[in-house]
Image (cartoon, rainbow, N blue to C red):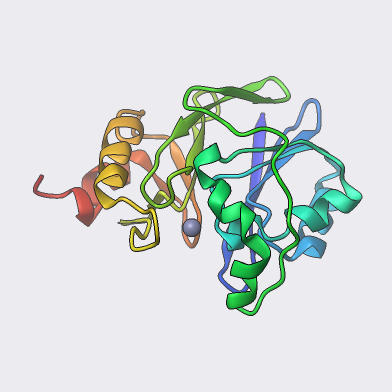
Length: 211
Ligand SMILES: [Zn+2]
């Protein structure tokens, strides 16, 4: 089975997620924002083999720990879409503005809409959903009914679109056209706070009611 555990990191309680195939013990971490020792503890606890880091977007609370983690785990860093390079370029400076430190890195590979990635025998599809940031991607596994949404979609809310190069209209359209077309019972790991499902958001998300 595909297993996952959500690990809130940084003072912003950003949801890093350890995901693994329990037959092969192959694992990845999403959005390595910081608190590396907590993430390493989880890898040890579940006795999995870290094979990669997948990033949803370039905000410092989602990527601030990547350089540190790669010092002990030299694994490929995948994502986000290259449109977020402008955030990664200035990562140490942006993190410092929030009183945090983040080492600079560049992903091994940027991702495009419809790219396919895998964890053990489970396939994930990459969906590029700009709006919160221009390079935001989400990761969808149909078989395990799991969506890693980053800051695109939250429980009864959506990502902020008041940052430079954000686009509120694109965000709404992306959620409508790429997430709300998925089955209702898909579990959604959001970037901060509680998990939700596609069905719950289609019914209850106030940003999409009466439209
Ligand atoms: Zn963000």
